[in-house]
Image (tube, rainbow, N blue to C red; front, side, top):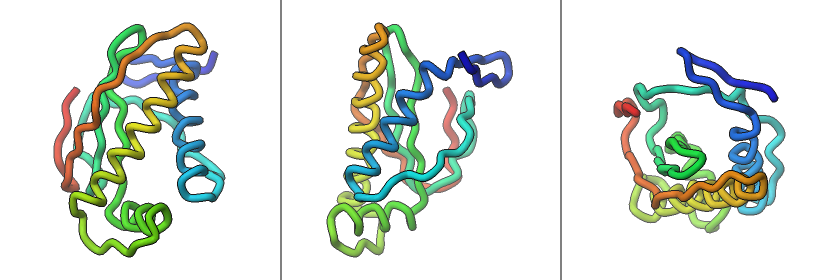
Length: 138
């Protein structure tokens, strides 16, 4: 199995791939367009958030940790326009709710995929962080 490593942390591709497939599936379903490529997965123990909206979902069980989706305001507005059909120009509760639902649906699909390979995990409701440059420590 392929592994991703950083600062003594190692994660099997078997655990990462359900999340990658889940976000691809959710985005394809919601936006009616295919995700053509994904970036290289990485591990982090925290740090400064690079985007304006971050959704944090806790994972507990045989797979435990934190699942993050962090998006720019521009992406959030584009996603909202594509999914809801309404133009958004500010990060309000409705836009935040859309990103929360995106992350919740993705984490749920990933948890189901993990269970199919014999690994149980429960997910927490999303915690939303609004603001670029906020610091997160895990």
